[in-house]
Length: 138
Image (cartoon, rainbow, N blue to C red; front, top):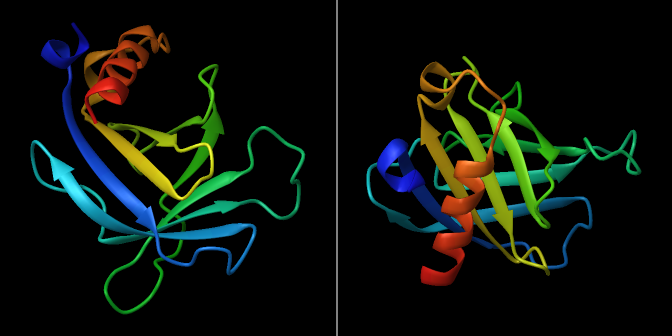
């Protein structure tokens, strides 16, 4: 099973600016399951305003306790799983999958540590199984 292959940290976030802005959603960390955080307590999941019809229109940005950090943490791409976006850490070592709720008021970040160092393929079937398994158990 994927949980035996990959070291995963699961972050659960809730939206804190409900309805304030349509394209920018701010989230606050609620819980970390197994391990320590690789992100920050506050994050933004943002649609790219230049091309809202694109399937590559999301960004993840982190907060350093004083301001939103630039450049953005990662670009997020749509996957074949509904409401799941994928990205990578800055050094392209870690895989980041974001599982959005259907209303986008909650998101779960699956942070796969050293994923790209251990797995050189772009076959995400094992991590999708991991997400499906965790959707049931969250």
